[in-house]
Length: 341
Length: 260
Picture 1 (cartoon, each protein chain N blue to C red):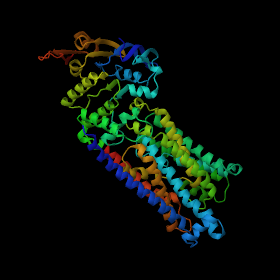
Picture 2 (cartoon, chains in turn cyan, orange):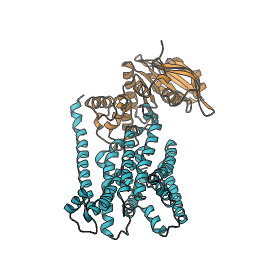
Picture 3 (tube, each protein chain N blue to C red):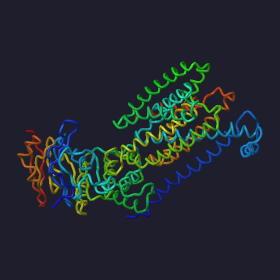
Picture 4 (cartoon, chains in turn yellow, green):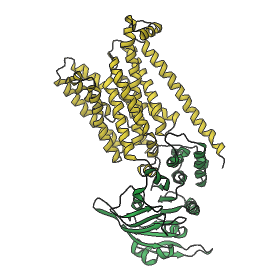
Protein backbone atom coordinates (compact mmCIF):
# COMPACT_ATOMS: atom_id res chain seq x y z
CA UNK A 1 0.00 0.00 0.00
CA UNK A 2 1.39 3.32 -1.10
CA UNK A 3 0.63 6.17 1.26
CA UNK A 4 2.59 8.74 -0.74
CA UNK A 5 0.33 8.24 -3.76
CA UNK A 6 -2.73 9.28 -1.78
CA UNK A 7 -1.43 12.53 -0.37
CA UNK A 8 -1.52 14.62 -3.59
CA UNK A 9 -5.32 14.19 -3.80
CA UNK A 10 -5.68 15.50 -0.28
CA UNK A 11 -3.38 18.35 -1.21
CA UNK A 12 -5.56 19.31 -4.16
CA UNK A 13 -8.54 19.72 -1.88
CA UNK A 14 -6.39 21.62 0.60
CA UNK A 15 -5.10 23.88 -2.14
CA UNK A 16 -8.63 24.73 -3.28
CA UNK A 17 -9.58 25.52 0.31
CA UNK A 18 -6.47 27.69 0.72
CA UNK A 19 -7.23 29.70 -2.42
CA UNK A 20 -10.80 30.18 -1.20
CA UNK A 21 -9.53 31.35 2.19
CA UNK A 22 -7.20 33.91 0.59
CA UNK A 23 -10.05 35.19 -1.61
CA UNK A 24 -12.36 35.42 1.41
CA UNK A 25 -9.79 37.32 3.49
CA UNK A 26 -9.08 39.76 0.64
CA UNK A 27 -12.82 40.30 0.08
CA UNK A 28 -13.18 40.89 3.79
CA UNK A 29 -10.57 43.66 3.79
CA UNK A 30 -11.91 45.23 0.59
CA UNK A 31 -15.54 45.18 1.71
CA UNK A 32 -14.57 46.65 5.09
CA UNK A 33 -12.63 49.47 3.41
CA UNK A 34 -15.40 50.22 0.89
CA UNK A 35 -17.98 50.16 3.67
CA UNK A 36 -15.79 52.46 5.78
CA UNK A 37 -15.35 54.88 2.84
CA UNK A 38 -18.98 54.99 1.86
CA UNK A 39 -21.07 57.84 3.21
CA UNK A 40 -22.64 61.19 2.45
CA UNK A 41 -19.56 63.21 3.44
CA UNK A 42 -16.81 63.03 0.83
CA UNK A 43 -13.89 62.36 3.12
CA UNK A 44 -10.84 60.65 1.68
CA UNK A 45 -9.57 57.36 3.04
CA UNK A 46 -6.54 59.23 4.43
CA UNK A 47 -8.76 61.77 6.26
CA UNK A 48 -10.92 59.00 7.65
CA UNK A 49 -7.99 57.00 8.96
CA UNK A 50 -6.43 60.12 10.44
CA UNK A 51 -9.77 60.84 12.10
CA UNK A 52 -10.07 57.25 13.27
CA UNK A 53 -6.67 57.40 14.93
CA UNK A 54 -6.88 60.89 16.41
CA UNK A 55 -10.59 61.13 17.07
CA UNK A 56 -10.40 64.88 16.47
CA UNK A 57 -12.66 67.04 14.35
CA UNK A 58 -15.49 66.12 12.02
CA UNK A 59 -13.46 63.36 10.39
CA UNK A 60 -12.80 61.87 13.81
CA UNK A 61 -16.46 61.83 14.76
CA UNK A 62 -17.56 60.46 11.41
CA UNK A 63 -14.85 57.79 11.38
CA UNK A 64 -15.25 56.66 14.96
CA UNK A 65 -18.92 57.15 15.65
CA UNK A 66 -20.51 56.39 12.28
CA UNK A 67 -18.34 54.58 9.78
CA UNK A 68 -16.37 52.23 12.03
CA UNK A 69 -19.36 50.81 13.93
CA UNK A 70 -21.29 50.25 10.73
CA UNK A 71 -18.46 48.65 8.77
CA UNK A 72 -17.29 46.50 11.69
CA UNK A 73 -20.80 45.48 12.73
CA UNK A 74 -21.53 44.25 9.22
CA UNK A 75 -18.56 41.90 9.52
CA UNK A 76 -19.45 40.77 13.06
CA UNK A 77 -23.10 40.11 12.25
CA UNK A 78 -22.27 38.34 9.04
CA UNK A 79 -19.71 36.15 10.79
CA UNK A 80 -22.18 35.25 13.54
CA UNK A 81 -24.93 34.37 11.06
CA UNK A 82 -22.68 32.50 8.64
CA UNK A 83 -21.11 30.35 11.35
CA UNK A 84 -24.52 29.72 12.95
CA UNK A 85 -25.92 28.57 9.62
CA UNK A 86 -23.03 26.18 9.02
CA UNK A 87 -23.35 24.74 12.54
CA UNK A 88 -27.13 24.30 12.37
CA UNK A 89 -26.83 22.59 9.00
CA UNK A 90 -24.26 20.26 10.50
CA UNK A 91 -26.44 19.50 13.51
CA UNK A 92 -29.57 18.79 11.46
CA UNK A 93 -27.53 17.28 8.63
CA UNK A 94 -29.68 19.38 6.36
CA UNK A 95 -28.77 22.30 4.08
CA UNK A 96 -32.06 24.08 4.82
CA UNK A 97 -31.24 24.82 8.47
CA UNK A 98 -30.30 28.43 9.18
CA UNK A 99 -30.95 30.95 12.00
CA UNK A 100 -33.50 32.91 9.93
CA UNK A 101 -35.38 29.99 8.45
CA UNK A 102 -35.55 28.21 11.80
CA UNK A 103 -37.01 31.26 13.55
CA UNK A 104 -34.01 32.01 15.78
CA UNK A 105 -33.48 35.55 14.44
CA UNK A 106 -37.20 36.35 14.77
CA UNK A 107 -37.41 35.36 18.42
CA UNK A 108 -34.11 37.12 19.11
CA UNK A 109 -35.62 40.25 17.54
CA UNK A 110 -38.68 39.85 19.74
CA UNK A 111 -36.46 39.69 22.81
CA UNK A 112 -34.65 42.85 21.76
CA UNK A 113 -37.92 44.70 21.09
CA UNK A 114 -39.29 43.73 24.50
CA UNK A 115 -36.11 44.99 26.20
CA UNK A 116 -36.09 48.25 24.24
CA UNK A 117 -39.71 49.32 24.29
CA UNK A 118 -40.51 48.45 27.84
CA UNK A 119 -37.63 50.54 29.06
CA UNK A 120 -35.60 47.61 30.32
CA UNK A 121 -32.69 48.43 28.05
CA UNK A 122 -32.57 51.93 29.56
CA UNK A 123 -32.07 50.57 33.09
CA UNK A 124 -29.10 48.44 32.08
CA UNK A 125 -27.36 48.45 28.74
CA UNK A 126 -26.75 44.73 28.96
CA UNK A 127 -30.41 43.85 29.06
CA UNK A 128 -30.83 44.43 25.32
CA UNK A 129 -28.37 41.74 24.22
CA UNK A 130 -29.42 39.56 27.15
CA UNK A 131 -33.05 39.63 26.04
CA UNK A 132 -32.10 39.03 22.41
CA UNK A 133 -29.98 36.02 23.38
CA UNK A 134 -32.83 34.87 25.63
CA UNK A 135 -35.28 35.17 22.76
CA UNK A 136 -32.92 33.25 20.52
CA UNK A 137 -32.61 30.55 23.20
CA UNK A 138 -36.39 30.02 23.15
CA UNK A 139 -36.50 29.00 19.49
CA UNK A 140 -33.11 27.35 19.75
CA UNK A 141 -34.57 25.27 22.60
CA UNK A 142 -37.37 24.16 20.32
CA UNK A 143 -34.72 23.26 17.76
CA UNK A 144 -32.91 21.28 20.44
CA UNK A 145 -36.03 19.23 21.11
CA UNK A 146 -36.57 18.76 17.37
CA UNK A 147 -32.99 17.62 16.80
CA UNK A 148 -33.26 15.17 19.69
CA UNK A 149 -36.24 13.57 17.99
CA UNK A 150 -34.28 13.35 14.73
CA UNK A 151 -36.43 15.89 12.89
CA UNK A 152 -36.59 15.85 9.12
CA UNK A 153 -36.35 18.90 6.88
CA UNK A 154 -40.11 19.31 6.83
CA UNK A 155 -40.51 19.51 10.62
CA UNK A 156 -37.56 21.89 10.85
CA UNK A 157 -38.89 24.34 8.27
CA UNK A 158 -42.47 24.20 9.54
CA UNK A 159 -41.37 24.80 13.12
CA UNK A 160 -39.29 27.71 11.85
CA UNK A 161 -42.28 29.19 10.01
CA UNK A 162 -44.47 28.83 13.08
CA UNK A 163 -41.92 30.38 15.45
CA UNK A 164 -41.09 33.22 13.07
CA UNK A 165 -44.77 34.11 12.53
CA UNK A 166 -45.49 33.96 16.22
CA UNK A 167 -42.46 36.09 17.07
CA UNK A 168 -43.40 38.62 14.39
CA UNK A 169 -46.94 38.87 15.73
CA UNK A 170 -45.67 39.35 19.28
CA UNK A 171 -43.15 41.93 18.05
CA UNK A 172 -46.01 43.90 16.45
CA UNK A 173 -48.05 43.54 19.64
CA UNK A 174 -45.16 44.69 21.82
CA UNK A 175 -44.56 47.72 19.62
CA UNK A 176 -48.20 48.74 19.64
CA UNK A 177 -48.34 48.50 23.44
CA UNK A 178 -45.19 50.56 23.66
CA UNK A 179 -47.07 53.46 22.03
CA UNK A 180 -44.06 54.51 20.08
CA UNK A 181 -44.95 57.08 17.39
CA UNK A 182 -42.54 55.40 15.02
CA UNK A 183 -43.84 51.93 15.82
CA UNK A 184 -44.46 50.88 12.23
CA UNK A 185 -41.07 51.85 10.89
CA UNK A 186 -39.35 50.47 13.99
CA UNK A 187 -41.13 47.18 13.60
CA UNK A 188 -40.09 46.87 9.98
CA UNK A 189 -36.54 47.68 10.98
CA UNK A 190 -36.44 44.89 13.58
CA UNK A 191 -38.05 42.40 11.25
CA UNK A 192 -35.86 43.15 8.23
CA UNK A 193 -32.65 44.25 9.91
CA UNK A 194 -30.61 47.36 9.30
CA UNK A 195 -27.25 48.87 10.13
CA UNK A 196 -28.41 52.49 9.95
CA UNK A 197 -27.30 54.64 12.89
CA UNK A 198 -25.46 51.90 14.73
CA UNK A 199 -23.14 53.02 17.50
CA UNK A 200 -19.89 51.87 19.04
CA UNK A 201 -21.94 50.52 21.91
CA UNK A 202 -23.69 48.09 19.58
CA UNK A 203 -20.32 46.93 18.34
CA UNK A 204 -19.01 46.66 21.91
CA UNK A 205 -21.56 44.04 22.93
CA UNK A 206 -22.18 42.34 19.58
CA UNK A 207 -18.54 41.57 18.81
CA UNK A 208 -17.53 39.71 21.99
CA UNK A 209 -20.81 37.80 22.23
CA UNK A 210 -20.68 36.78 18.58
CA UNK A 211 -17.09 35.67 18.87
CA UNK A 212 -17.91 33.72 22.03
CA UNK A 213 -20.79 32.05 20.20
CA UNK A 214 -18.57 31.11 17.26
CA UNK A 215 -15.93 29.68 19.64
CA UNK A 216 -18.61 27.54 21.32
CA UNK A 217 -19.66 26.28 17.89
CA UNK A 218 -16.07 25.44 17.01
CA UNK A 219 -15.62 23.31 20.13
CA UNK A 220 -18.44 21.07 18.89
CA UNK A 221 -17.28 20.86 15.28
CA UNK A 222 -15.67 17.45 15.54
CA UNK A 223 -18.91 16.04 16.92
CA UNK A 224 -20.70 17.46 13.89
CA UNK A 225 -18.33 15.54 11.60
CA UNK A 226 -19.08 12.32 13.46
CA UNK A 227 -22.82 13.01 13.24
CA UNK A 228 -22.47 12.61 9.47
CA UNK A 229 -22.60 8.88 10.26
CA UNK A 230 -25.74 9.15 12.39
CA UNK A 231 -26.19 9.44 16.13
CA UNK A 232 -25.45 5.84 17.13
CA UNK A 233 -22.24 5.75 15.10
CA UNK A 234 -21.18 9.15 16.49
CA UNK A 235 -21.78 7.84 20.00
CA UNK A 236 -19.72 4.74 19.25
CA UNK A 237 -16.87 7.03 18.13
CA UNK A 238 -16.77 8.56 21.60
CA UNK A 239 -18.86 11.66 20.85
CA UNK A 240 -21.24 12.92 23.54
CA UNK A 241 -24.07 13.63 21.10
CA UNK A 242 -26.26 15.40 23.66
CA UNK A 243 -23.43 17.74 24.64
CA UNK A 244 -22.67 18.50 20.98
CA UNK A 245 -26.33 19.33 20.43
CA UNK A 246 -26.60 21.64 23.43
CA UNK A 247 -23.34 23.42 22.57
CA UNK A 248 -24.49 24.07 18.99
CA UNK A 249 -27.86 25.35 20.14
CA UNK A 250 -26.28 27.59 22.80
CA UNK A 251 -23.58 28.88 20.45
CA UNK A 252 -26.15 29.70 17.78
CA UNK A 253 -28.36 31.48 20.31
CA UNK A 254 -25.39 33.50 21.59
CA UNK A 255 -24.08 34.53 18.16
CA UNK A 256 -27.45 35.07 16.50
CA UNK A 257 -28.91 36.77 19.55
CA UNK A 258 -26.02 39.25 19.69
CA UNK A 259 -26.18 39.90 15.95
CA UNK A 260 -29.92 40.45 16.04
CA UNK A 261 -29.75 42.74 19.07
CA UNK A 262 -27.39 44.96 17.09
CA UNK A 263 -29.01 44.87 13.66
CA UNK A 264 -32.44 43.24 13.77
CA UNK A 265 -33.38 40.04 12.00
CA UNK A 266 -31.19 39.47 8.94
CA UNK A 267 -32.16 36.24 7.23
CA UNK A 268 -30.69 33.78 4.76
CA UNK A 269 -27.00 34.65 5.31
CA UNK A 270 -26.48 31.34 7.12
CA UNK A 271 -28.29 29.51 4.34
CA UNK A 272 -26.45 30.80 1.29
CA UNK A 273 -22.90 31.04 2.60
CA UNK A 274 -22.21 27.44 3.76
CA UNK A 275 -23.86 26.11 0.62
CA UNK A 276 -21.61 28.14 -1.67
CA UNK A 277 -18.49 27.35 0.36
CA UNK A 278 -18.98 23.55 0.31
CA UNK A 279 -17.73 23.66 -3.26
CA UNK A 280 -14.35 24.82 -1.98
CA UNK A 281 -14.10 23.34 1.50
CA UNK A 282 -15.91 20.04 1.01
CA UNK A 283 -18.80 18.67 3.03
CA UNK A 284 -17.21 18.10 6.44
CA UNK A 285 -19.20 20.33 8.82
CA UNK A 286 -16.12 21.13 10.94
CA UNK A 287 -14.31 22.65 7.96
CA UNK A 288 -17.20 24.94 7.12
CA UNK A 289 -17.77 26.89 10.33
CA UNK A 290 -14.86 29.34 10.17
CA UNK A 291 -15.01 29.86 6.39
CA UNK A 292 -18.76 30.45 6.72
CA UNK A 293 -18.02 33.10 9.35
CA UNK A 294 -15.67 34.81 6.86
CA UNK A 295 -18.11 34.38 3.98
CA UNK A 296 -21.02 35.67 6.06
CA UNK A 297 -18.98 38.73 7.02
CA UNK A 298 -18.23 39.45 3.36
CA UNK A 299 -21.83 38.88 2.30
CA UNK A 300 -23.37 41.17 4.95
CA UNK A 301 -20.75 43.87 4.35
CA UNK A 302 -21.42 43.68 0.60
CA UNK A 303 -25.18 43.72 1.16
CA UNK A 304 -24.84 46.77 3.41
CA UNK A 305 -22.77 48.50 0.74
CA UNK A 306 -25.46 47.67 -1.82
CA UNK A 307 -28.14 49.04 0.51
CA UNK A 308 -26.35 52.38 0.72
CA UNK A 309 -25.55 52.57 -3.00
CA UNK A 310 -29.12 51.80 -4.07
CA UNK A 311 -30.80 54.07 -1.51
CA UNK A 312 -28.38 56.56 0.11
CA UNK A 313 -31.27 58.04 2.13
CA UNK A 314 -31.37 54.94 4.35
CA UNK A 315 -34.80 53.79 3.19
CA UNK A 316 -33.68 50.35 2.05
CA UNK A 317 -33.12 47.78 4.81
CA UNK A 318 -30.28 45.28 4.97
CA UNK A 319 -32.55 42.26 5.41
CA UNK A 320 -34.39 43.18 2.21
CA UNK A 321 -31.23 42.67 0.20
CA UNK A 322 -30.24 39.41 1.93
CA UNK A 323 -33.80 38.08 1.57
CA UNK A 324 -33.89 39.00 -2.12
CA UNK A 325 -30.75 36.93 -2.55
CA UNK A 326 -31.64 34.21 -0.09
CA UNK A 327 -35.34 33.51 -0.51
CA UNK A 328 -35.17 32.43 -4.19
CA UNK A 329 -32.09 30.42 -3.26
CA UNK A 330 -34.02 28.72 -0.44
CA UNK A 331 -36.81 27.81 -2.88
CA UNK A 332 -34.31 26.46 -5.39
CA UNK A 333 -32.68 24.39 -2.66
CA UNK A 334 -36.04 22.86 -1.65
CA UNK A 335 -36.84 22.00 -5.27
CA UNK A 336 -33.42 20.43 -5.72
CA UNK A 337 -33.68 18.40 -2.51
CA UNK A 338 -37.10 17.17 -3.61
CA UNK A 339 -35.84 16.03 -6.97
CA UNK A 340 -32.96 14.21 -5.26
CA UNK A 341 -35.21 12.28 -2.90
CA UNK B 1 -12.56 -17.95 30.00
CA UNK B 2 -14.35 -14.65 29.95
CA UNK B 3 -15.36 -13.39 26.56
CA UNK B 4 -14.28 -9.99 25.18
CA UNK B 5 -17.90 -8.92 25.43
CA UNK B 6 -19.89 -10.64 28.14
CA UNK B 7 -23.62 -10.28 28.87
CA UNK B 8 -24.75 -11.59 32.26
CA UNK B 9 -28.50 -11.89 32.78
CA UNK B 10 -29.09 -8.61 30.91
CA UNK B 11 -32.60 -7.23 30.59
CA UNK B 12 -33.49 -3.95 28.94
CA UNK B 13 -36.71 -2.17 28.17
CA UNK B 14 -38.02 0.79 26.22
CA UNK B 15 -40.50 2.27 28.65
CA UNK B 16 -42.59 -0.62 29.94
CA UNK B 17 -41.86 -2.85 26.94
CA UNK B 18 -39.16 -5.42 27.61
CA UNK B 19 -36.76 -5.68 24.66
CA UNK B 20 -34.15 -8.02 26.07
CA UNK B 21 -34.99 -10.51 28.80
CA UNK B 22 -32.34 -12.22 30.84
CA UNK B 23 -29.67 -12.54 28.14
CA UNK B 24 -26.48 -14.32 29.11
CA UNK B 25 -24.01 -14.77 26.30
CA UNK B 26 -20.48 -13.88 25.30
CA UNK B 27 -18.46 -12.88 22.27
CA UNK B 28 -14.96 -14.28 22.31
CA UNK B 29 -11.78 -12.77 20.90
CA UNK B 30 -10.65 -14.34 17.65
CA UNK B 31 -14.09 -15.65 16.77
CA UNK B 32 -16.89 -14.58 14.45
CA UNK B 33 -20.23 -14.78 16.21
CA UNK B 34 -23.37 -14.44 14.13
CA UNK B 35 -26.50 -13.08 15.76
CA UNK B 36 -29.67 -14.21 14.03
CA UNK B 37 -33.35 -13.89 14.77
CA UNK B 38 -36.59 -12.65 13.26
CA UNK B 39 -37.29 -8.91 12.89
CA UNK B 40 -37.71 -7.28 16.27
CA UNK B 41 -35.89 -10.06 18.13
CA UNK B 42 -33.60 -7.57 19.89
CA UNK B 43 -30.42 -7.96 17.82
CA UNK B 44 -29.80 -4.23 17.44
CA UNK B 45 -30.78 -3.64 21.08
CA UNK B 46 -28.09 -6.08 22.14
CA UNK B 47 -25.49 -3.89 20.38
CA UNK B 48 -26.98 -0.67 21.76
CA UNK B 49 -26.70 -2.11 25.27
CA UNK B 50 -23.03 -3.02 24.65
CA UNK B 51 -22.34 0.55 23.49
CA UNK B 52 -23.98 2.05 26.55
CA UNK B 53 -26.71 3.65 24.42
CA UNK B 54 -29.27 1.77 26.48
CA UNK B 55 -28.87 1.04 30.17
CA UNK B 56 -29.81 -2.49 31.21
CA UNK B 57 -32.63 -2.58 33.74
CA UNK B 58 -30.85 -5.55 35.30
CA UNK B 59 -27.76 -7.65 34.68
CA UNK B 60 -24.22 -6.58 33.82
CA UNK B 61 -22.17 -6.16 30.66
CA UNK B 62 -18.39 -6.55 30.69
CA UNK B 63 -16.23 -5.17 27.91
CA UNK B 64 -12.73 -6.65 27.88
CA UNK B 65 -13.36 -7.96 31.40
CA UNK B 66 -14.21 -4.49 32.74
CA UNK B 67 -17.77 -3.48 33.63
CA UNK B 68 -19.32 -1.18 31.04
CA UNK B 69 -20.01 1.52 33.62
CA UNK B 70 -16.31 1.83 34.41
CA UNK B 71 -15.30 2.61 30.82
CA UNK B 72 -14.68 6.21 29.83
CA UNK B 73 -16.44 7.43 26.71
CA UNK B 74 -13.14 7.70 24.82
CA UNK B 75 -11.86 4.36 26.07
CA UNK B 76 -15.01 2.55 25.00
CA UNK B 77 -14.80 4.20 21.57
CA UNK B 78 -11.35 2.67 21.14
CA UNK B 79 -12.54 -0.71 22.44
CA UNK B 80 -15.64 -1.17 20.27
CA UNK B 81 -16.05 -0.42 16.59
CA UNK B 82 -19.70 -0.29 15.61
CA UNK B 83 -21.32 -0.35 12.20
CA UNK B 84 -25.01 0.55 12.61
CA UNK B 85 -27.75 -1.00 10.55
CA UNK B 86 -28.59 0.72 7.26
CA UNK B 87 -25.90 3.25 7.97
CA UNK B 88 -25.34 5.91 5.39
CA UNK B 89 -23.58 9.24 5.18
CA UNK B 90 -25.73 12.31 5.76
CA UNK B 91 -23.30 14.51 3.85
CA UNK B 92 -21.59 13.38 0.66
CA UNK B 93 -18.08 13.38 2.12
CA UNK B 94 -15.20 12.05 0.11
CA UNK B 95 -14.88 8.31 0.80
CA UNK B 96 -11.48 8.87 2.38
CA UNK B 97 -12.77 11.64 4.67
CA UNK B 98 -15.60 9.39 5.75
CA UNK B 99 -13.31 6.48 6.61
CA UNK B 100 -11.06 8.90 8.51
CA UNK B 101 -13.97 9.45 10.92
CA UNK B 102 -13.30 5.91 12.08
CA UNK B 103 -9.98 7.15 13.44
CA UNK B 104 -11.59 9.86 15.58
CA UNK B 105 -11.21 7.88 18.83
CA UNK B 106 -7.44 7.78 18.25
CA UNK B 107 -6.97 11.40 17.22
CA UNK B 108 -6.16 14.33 19.48
CA UNK B 109 -8.68 17.18 19.51
CA UNK B 110 -8.32 19.58 16.57
CA UNK B 111 -5.40 17.55 15.20
CA UNK B 112 -5.09 17.51 11.43
CA UNK B 113 -5.05 14.23 9.51
CA UNK B 114 -1.57 12.80 9.86
CA UNK B 115 0.16 10.56 7.33
CA UNK B 116 -0.30 7.70 9.78
CA UNK B 117 -4.07 8.24 9.88
CA UNK B 118 -4.19 8.43 6.08
CA UNK B 119 -2.23 5.19 5.81
CA UNK B 120 -4.64 3.41 8.19
CA UNK B 121 -7.58 4.84 6.25
CA UNK B 122 -6.29 3.68 2.89
CA UNK B 123 -5.46 0.26 4.30
CA UNK B 124 -9.07 -0.10 5.48
CA UNK B 125 -10.35 1.05 2.08
CA UNK B 126 -8.05 -1.40 0.31
CA UNK B 127 -9.25 -4.31 2.44
CA UNK B 128 -12.84 -3.43 1.53
CA UNK B 129 -11.98 -3.27 -2.17
CA UNK B 130 -12.85 0.42 -2.12
CA UNK B 131 -9.47 2.13 -2.52
CA UNK B 132 -10.19 2.85 -6.18
CA UNK B 133 -12.90 5.31 -5.21
CA UNK B 134 -11.14 6.79 -2.18
CA UNK B 135 -11.24 10.31 -3.66
CA UNK B 136 -14.86 10.07 -4.88
CA UNK B 137 -17.78 11.62 -3.06
CA UNK B 138 -20.31 9.33 -1.37
CA UNK B 139 -23.17 10.57 -3.58
CA UNK B 140 -21.28 9.43 -6.65
CA UNK B 141 -21.17 5.82 -5.43
CA UNK B 142 -23.73 3.02 -5.69
CA UNK B 143 -25.46 1.69 -2.56
CA UNK B 144 -23.15 -1.33 -2.50
CA UNK B 145 -20.04 0.79 -2.92
CA UNK B 146 -21.18 3.11 -0.12
CA UNK B 147 -21.75 0.07 2.10
CA UNK B 148 -18.14 -0.98 1.50
CA UNK B 149 -16.84 2.50 2.39
CA UNK B 150 -18.95 2.56 5.55
CA UNK B 151 -17.65 -0.86 6.49
CA UNK B 152 -14.11 0.42 5.95
CA UNK B 153 -14.92 3.28 8.35
CA UNK B 154 -15.69 0.82 11.16
CA UNK B 155 -12.67 -1.29 10.24
CA UNK B 156 -10.39 1.77 10.42
CA UNK B 157 -11.05 2.13 14.16
CA UNK B 158 -9.07 -1.10 14.67
CA UNK B 159 -10.84 -1.90 17.94
CA UNK B 160 -10.57 -5.24 19.77
CA UNK B 161 -14.36 -5.60 19.43
CA UNK B 162 -16.17 -5.25 16.12
CA UNK B 163 -19.97 -5.08 16.11
CA UNK B 164 -21.63 -4.98 12.70
CA UNK B 165 -25.41 -4.69 12.35
CA UNK B 166 -26.67 -6.14 9.07
CA UNK B 167 -23.52 -5.32 7.08
CA UNK B 168 -24.51 -7.73 4.29
CA UNK B 169 -27.58 -5.75 3.23
CA UNK B 170 -27.10 -4.00 -0.16
CA UNK B 171 -24.11 -6.17 -1.05
CA UNK B 172 -24.00 -8.38 -4.13
CA UNK B 173 -23.20 -12.09 -3.55
CA UNK B 174 -19.49 -11.75 -4.26
CA UNK B 175 -19.16 -8.81 -1.87
CA UNK B 176 -21.25 -10.63 0.76
CA UNK B 177 -18.72 -13.44 0.66
CA UNK B 178 -15.87 -10.91 0.70
CA UNK B 179 -17.50 -9.32 3.74
CA UNK B 180 -17.52 -12.64 5.58
CA UNK B 181 -13.85 -13.15 4.64
CA UNK B 182 -13.08 -9.72 6.04
CA UNK B 183 -14.83 -10.53 9.30
CA UNK B 184 -12.83 -13.76 9.40
CA UNK B 185 -9.64 -11.76 8.75
CA UNK B 186 -10.54 -9.41 11.62
CA UNK B 187 -11.11 -12.37 13.92
CA UNK B 188 -7.74 -13.75 12.77
CA UNK B 189 -6.13 -10.59 14.17
CA UNK B 190 -7.64 -11.42 17.55
CA UNK B 191 -10.72 -9.22 17.27
CA UNK B 192 -13.99 -10.40 18.77
CA UNK B 193 -16.44 -10.07 15.88
CA UNK B 194 -20.21 -9.98 16.38
CA UNK B 195 -22.39 -9.62 13.33
CA UNK B 196 -26.15 -9.68 12.89
CA UNK B 197 -27.27 -11.44 9.73
CA UNK B 198 -30.59 -12.30 8.16
CA UNK B 199 -29.01 -14.66 5.69
CA UNK B 200 -28.86 -18.00 7.51
CA UNK B 201 -26.69 -19.53 4.78
CA UNK B 202 -24.03 -16.85 5.29
CA UNK B 203 -24.31 -17.19 9.05
CA UNK B 204 -24.06 -20.97 9.10
CA UNK B 205 -21.18 -21.13 6.61
CA UNK B 206 -18.99 -18.34 7.95
CA UNK B 207 -19.59 -17.92 11.67
CA UNK B 208 -17.84 -19.89 14.41
CA UNK B 209 -20.68 -19.40 16.79
CA UNK B 210 -24.36 -18.53 16.43
CA UNK B 211 -26.52 -16.67 18.92
CA UNK B 212 -30.25 -16.96 18.20
CA UNK B 213 -32.54 -14.29 19.61
CA UNK B 214 -36.32 -14.50 19.62
CA UNK B 215 -38.63 -11.88 21.13
CA UNK B 216 -35.80 -10.55 23.29
CA UNK B 217 -34.86 -13.94 24.67
CA UNK B 218 -31.91 -16.16 23.99
CA UNK B 219 -33.39 -19.00 21.91
CA UNK B 220 -30.17 -20.87 21.31
CA UNK B 221 -26.42 -20.61 20.94
CA UNK B 222 -23.54 -22.77 19.88
CA UNK B 223 -21.78 -24.00 16.76
CA UNK B 224 -23.89 -23.21 13.66
CA UNK B 225 -25.15 -26.77 13.02
CA UNK B 226 -26.10 -27.24 16.68
CA UNK B 227 -27.69 -23.83 17.15
CA UNK B 228 -29.58 -23.84 13.83
CA UNK B 229 -31.30 -27.17 14.39
CA UNK B 230 -34.52 -28.04 12.53
CA UNK B 231 -36.48 -27.76 15.77
CA UNK B 232 -35.14 -24.26 16.49
CA UNK B 233 -35.66 -23.06 12.92
CA UNK B 234 -39.26 -24.25 13.07
CA UNK B 235 -39.88 -22.69 16.47
CA UNK B 236 -38.12 -19.33 15.98
CA UNK B 237 -38.35 -18.63 12.26
CA UNK B 238 -41.27 -20.86 11.25
CA UNK B 239 -39.26 -22.37 8.41
CA UNK B 240 -37.88 -25.72 7.31
CA UNK B 241 -34.32 -25.66 5.99
CA UNK B 242 -31.94 -27.62 3.83
CA UNK B 243 -28.60 -28.48 5.38
CA UNK B 244 -26.15 -28.63 2.49
CA UNK B 245 -22.78 -30.18 3.34
CA UNK B 246 -19.64 -28.57 1.95
CA UNK B 247 -17.86 -31.11 -0.30
CA UNK B 248 -14.54 -29.42 0.47
CA UNK B 249 -14.95 -30.02 4.17
CA UNK B 250 -16.16 -26.61 5.37
CA UNK B 251 -19.28 -25.96 7.40
CA UNK B 252 -22.65 -27.02 6.02
CA UNK B 253 -24.96 -24.27 4.75
CA UNK B 254 -28.41 -23.85 6.25
CA UNK B 255 -30.81 -22.62 3.59
CA UNK B 256 -34.41 -21.77 4.54
CA UNK B 257 -36.50 -23.85 2.16
CA UNK B 258 -40.18 -23.39 2.90
CA UNK B 259 -42.48 -21.79 5.39
CA UNK B 260 -44.11 -24.05 7.94
